[in-house]
Structures are given as C-alpha cells and as structure tokens.
Image 1 (cartoon, rainbow, N blue to C red):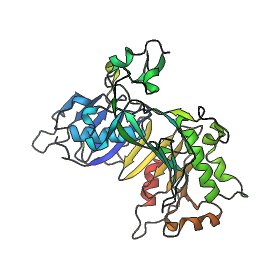
Image 2: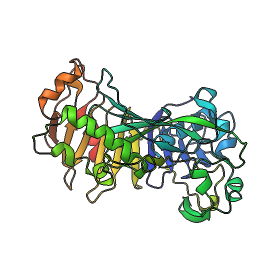
Image 3: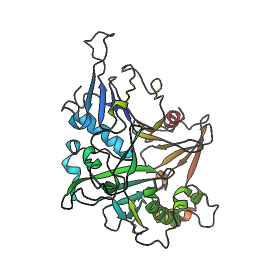
Image 4: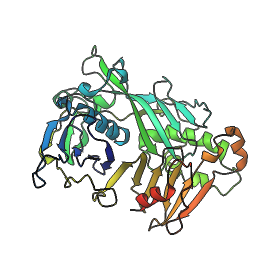
Length: 390
C-alpha cells in the first residue's frame, strides 16, 4: 500500500491514546498507545479472492519502510495533536519542523502578554516567547505551540541522573518506575549535550484542561471575558470554565509559582511491547461511519474534516469542532440537546463591536428538530450532530 494510495475516511484516538485510521479502500492502520509500533492491514485488491486473508504488516514506527512512511507521519501528527505526551522519533520528523538545538525546553514561565487578531483570538506567550497559548474567539477551545525535545531511547532515560527522585509513568497500560525527573525538567543527560527539538502544535478543550495549561488558560479566559462576557450578567461564561479558574488565582503569583513543566516526548522504545493489542475490522470499502463506528472508548475522532471529542466528566460530554471556529457541545445525560457557540455570523464585523452583545451567541439544537441544510453552508449541522449523537 503506497503512501497516498487511498484517502482517509476516519481517524480515531481511543482512551488509551492508541490510534485507529480507516481508509476508503478498506485498509486499516493501528498505532500502539506509546506510538512506538504499528500494524497495517492492507485494503481489498480486485485481483484477490474475496476470502483471502488480508495482508498485515507490523513494524517499529521509527524504522518504518518508505512504502508506509507518509501514512505513519500522518498518524503520528494526529496522535501528537491530542495525546497527553507526544511520540517524536527523529527519523519521522521533517526538517521544516525542527528547531535549533536546545538544552532546556520544558519549564516555562508565563506572563500576561496578549494580542488580538482580526478573528478575535487571545494569545498568551511565555516569558521567553517560545511557548504560545491561543484561545479561540468562542472561548471554548485553545491551541498550544511549544518546543518539545525529540524522543530519546528508553535505556538512556533509565540510566541518567540516578540521584534524582523516581517518577511513575505509564506505557501501554503497564506501570514502570524510571528516572524521568531530569527529563521533565529539561536537563541534559550531559552538561554539554544539546538536543534537537521540534515545534509541536496541540488542540485542547477548555473543559478538559491538563494542569500545565491551567495558568495560561486562566489568563486568556480572564481577558476574553472582559471583552465578551457580561460582567453584570448571570455568570454563565465564568461557570463554563470553572476548572481552569479553580486551579489558579493568578494575581499575586511569584516567578517560581508561574513556572510550569511542559509535556515531554515519550521514549523511542516501549518497555512493554508484548502488551500491545490490535483491534482490526474486516476490510470493506463499502463500510461507512454508520455501520463501522468504533466500539472502544473514544477520546478524539476525525471524520470528514470535523473533530469530535468525548470529555470524561460526571456526565460525559461530546464536543464538536466543525473547523469554522465554532464549537458544538452536548447538554444533558442522553445527549439529546446540543449548544452551538457560533461566531461565524459576526466574523465580518470588527470584533470589538462584539463586546456590546453582552454574551456569546448560542444556538440550542434538539436531535428531534435539527435545522435543514442550507445552500452555501460550510457543513451540515444535521449530519455533524447525528454523528456526534452516535
């Protein structure tokens, strides 16, 4: 199966951060939770007998052959955009994404620097200007960009800085103690060593925030509310982002308290490859999402340009990013109601005028009364929500 031989129909990241990619010709690519290994089942070939067993290829990710390299680069890009820790082998990192060698890239201090784009984004920068958090105009999702050191061999991580405390990390569901403290602090294995880093872009929900992003997100949300929310209103805008607010009162933190560790890359090799599992479906190019939906616990799914995210809360929430800057989120136990936080009708206006609206425009949908498709719309609300409800 050559790179680009078939188009992707669906990309899924499961709760254990394994990746499942389906292609239009029936092929399926599975990436292990740690990212270090993959298995590819080739799609149907007209010349083959219908009952012939599909050909399956299993390889180490960083040593993949040229026939699958582009497929693996795409799979890793999807995984790293949403995973708690990226997998960044140098062999699959394109030169355009590499940055100058850095000896310490994982501890950052944040300061209240913001700038407004013509789309109303709020940008918070670290003091060294190397790490950026961009809050979307809707105030419902954010993007982070930071320099992350490339993955290193596991034996190097285990043999360095033995005098430092041991931290627990998880690989493929198996717990193992290794001396990661030095890596998390961005310390070099040797004082004179320099390590290549890569510019990493991640996409997060404001309702599922990792601790290391709570501080800069709170700064961004504080400025966002001052411009969009109604200070004298019902406080709905504040309550929707309570997790970031509860983590932090930012007014009088010292420089040390504003220093946070960034997520670091996983090791190149996995400590428990025998625990990798592969969940294959029978290849059938006629299968669509309706008949071939994932049955495992899903974390993120991409389908036809739309990103679906399941937030693990007391009541599971389905969050949809259609790609136009708006966010659609389920409401209620049965996910029959969805709230659309939509700014698209205001993009043509100068964004400061939006502050006089008092609150963010919201549209509530019910699954039994979805709006019909209209000519010229970017996506079908009915199709998107039907997929989200499933």
